[in-house]
Length: 530
Image: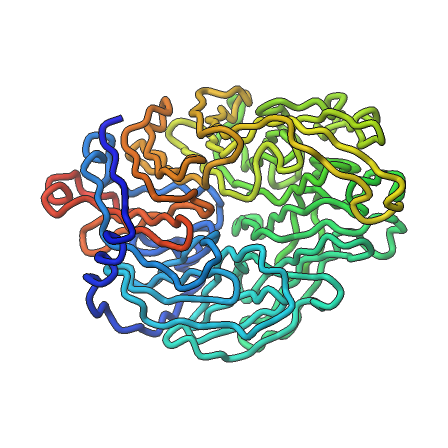
């Protein structure tokens, strides 16, 4: 390891106080062109672009100079909740969230421009993952299943619409996704008899445009659930929206909902203009272990076994890694990326076959992975140069119990962790083989992942360190102690000739860049795209 830097609270406060007055907020006027083709000085949506790859073409920070990386500024919120959101960046202004709160911050200095506080509400405050922007308007989800449209210039509220009824158990945490003239959102909620859905709204008026139900009421399926609490991805050429869905309910009691329970724990392709289902792939049929399949559906154009394909890749919480043809949903590869013992293999469609002997039982069943899953919501990254899919993994084992005395509904059981650790895995998408691993620490997982064209991987470990690794082999090149884990995913952008990397840790947002001299001598950053 070439260098370590520990950031104290004194240093953080000094960085914020030294930030200066910053730049005044401007009208943003974010167009579909920017969302389709983000510029190097922007990160205009949750994933950065519609592909979900979280890969940047910027190259100023390299393996040769990353040891010079230093803190540019830090912004500490006044809220106890940790930062799980991915900031978005437009016109030199960052927007990021924690539950009930949204900040606009100067991306050069860390100076706060404005702060919006949502009124007290009944929603679940488990986390908040960010906002969307279109034209001059921000779209923010309140924990109580409301969507608020705000003026990006000053944070004033334009309208507030209800997405779902918080009194029935719904909540919202995700960043909305803008596709054309649609603001697309999903919902959370794990209560029995709570159907879930994806909805699209008019960005100007907040009027509902369409709704897609995960478990259609007319299907007769006794399952509910299938929460849609993470933003999807989008292919503009196929005009298809890709979304992951969550677990069915009752959660651990599969007897109350026989069958596969379509389309829970699935990857689905929807028409973004109508909400009609085009295809679905169920990665956890008849789930009985709480393994949401909401993990990012990453879109990659390239060759698979020598033939060109428009692919979709997902490392799912249940321990399976899949590569699909995203035009048809046809399976190209299904394999595991860690310990998995709950299935009997895969069927002819490439979907896993649940083993009935591994359903929760009164005397317990040892299951891999645990309830948290082999990965979770933290974003992966795909590096097109190496063909590596990098994912924050959690090899783990747990004992699942069913408890009939608790009734047929609700959880009606429990799971108890036996063992687990955090590992960053680099998966070769052609074979599903793990090219290299980087240990992240016992028990917990690490952070989301960002890769760049210069061959760097940015992430975090379970001990609260920010890590910079060499993408080709996972070797540590630099790290910094942040004081707590990175629950959000890093982003990068280019402003005034400097490449910044932004990371969130605890309730602090850190911005990193090379010193002036090192940046001046670095190779010019590519400017052909974000």
